[in-house]
Amino acid sequence: MDKPKILIVEDDIDLSHMLCAFFRSQDYDVRAAVWGRDALAISREESLSLIMLDIRLPDMDGYEVYHQLRQNRHTQAVPIIFLSEKRHRVEILHGLELGVVDYIAKPFDVQELRLRVRNAILRASQPNLTNPVTNLPEMPLLEERFMEVTASKQPWSLLVVSIKGMDKLRELRGFVAADELFRAVALMVSSAIRDRGNDGDLVTHYRAEDLIILTTPDKVGRMRALIDSRVRQSLMHLYRPVDADGSSESRYLNIETSIVERSREPDLDIDGLRARLTAIIGAPAVEIGDAAEGSR
Image (tube, rainbow, N blue to C red; front, side, top):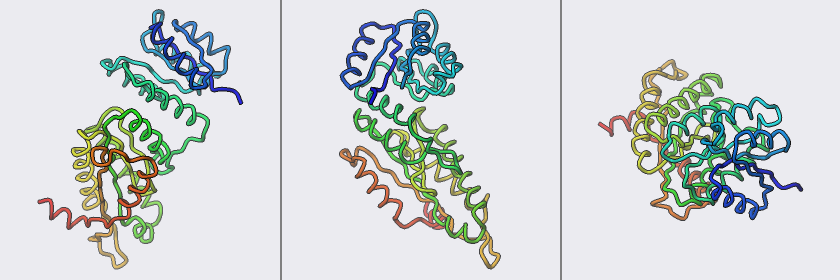
């Protein structure tokens, strides 16, 4: 079986040599380029599994290289990871807006970079796993990112958001109404992440009615409060499900949120994470009215 072939485009010669040596030791076939034009020439001639691309190059910036790679049918689907200085936040955001699969800020942990490279190549070789209702990623992407942050010893928090009562909603109003409701919930959650979270925070499905957010301990509390408030108000006021007797005051729809943090479970691995999430999502839900009264 052929080795995955990666191209490292980096004008810092010492860093380039270090990365080439490291990834060759990890059984990758590695090519290197200092200039953007050389990177484009190599990418036209060879079949690449992934490209690591510095944003600041001597002859052209990484964005221009990226655009030319995406215009070439031979390289339009190759995963690209941007390398950027941590202080250049605007560059990072611009790269993510363009569709770069990932970025890593210098100085970086080489083991974290190894996992990001491996996961990006694996994702590129597999079908795109997204939920058809919300277009959010499914659980495998969360597991990949979870392994990355735990391997790099980064602080992390998981926020679990579950909507209870969806089965009864489907029974009374049908699948279309249930899908529309959860799509609205997903939009509210994504909006809360933009308002209160970090640029690299991730939200995925656990099951059809459960969302998991990977964030940091300094953000998770405020994010939880905002999501809980927005979704709870929507369930209580904007969407009034009708029971079989015609009543619009049903309480069968409710939201439950929980937090899992590294500070409390520092040795949690993937198997432990799955078990922990199953235990949380199976716990009794909080009624909308009861929770609202208790928070006053």
